[in-house]
Image (cartoon, protein in one colour):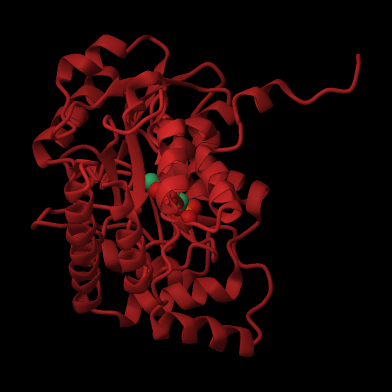
Length: 385
Ligand code: PLP
């Protein structure tokens, strides 16, 4: 046997997003490719973390997270969504939503299991499935509303299907699943005895009066639904790595064991910071997020419209897919490079969000930027007109 990498390295390659960030840095561009919000961290969150460091809270925590953070997460879900969650047995705090998702997949999926993924998808969902030896199968959402039919789900389900992933509000589409759509998914999951794993990290980024609903809120769905969410986006702390999973206690202890194995615990003082943010920030903060990002969305989409890169206007999250059919280039990667070289603004090629050629005419921009940066990006993009 010669020295070699594992076979799973073939499926888990450098993401297009990272690749575009590197290209962006090389060309001195403005990076609207990565979902890194550079908006300020709320003062209470920062103070909560620094107070915890000063107080010496620097050692390992319980693998499922500090009790006060789990209590604050349970309280948030009660207040906003009317859900009763057992903070001791049904919440696992992890290294971001990414860590929570990986721990959930490890606990619930066997190699060879099939998992239904809506596309356009968030690449980490698919790569993490591959890393676990599970097989993603795709249901393509149809524009303009990113809709689907129950039949689309029935067509791909097999005896090996174990779960379906929902991402609402969605990255990159900005789709906010309606009650009716979640009802269809719930009925399908019950009929085929599937888990519904739902990534809700953009739950507070909602526009045009859109309402966030979790599949777990629908009748009879608690046992089979696993919620994954986190604080990277809500508190602009992508580098802190704090997220969580909520699920029935039947699954939670195994999710927790994998979390312990991979990450031991989430960073101790930073857990204190987000716990304080959850406790102290009121409705106004969350409403403010939607208003602030809604205004950024409107401004940015108007520029895209003006230069003929028609946007699919998102109802949630903070990305926009733009139609690049009119730009030169055969692939979305060539088109994204054309945008970078002509205007100095980096985007992500649409191919990053589809398993086939479905994304060829899209690029994705992230508009979670401070106004000065977003304004400069808008000014530069006009060069493409
Ligand atoms: N889930 C979705 C849909 C995302 O878009 C992202 C980041 O872009 C994440 C999860 C990552 O979350 P975290 O930083 O908590 O790992």
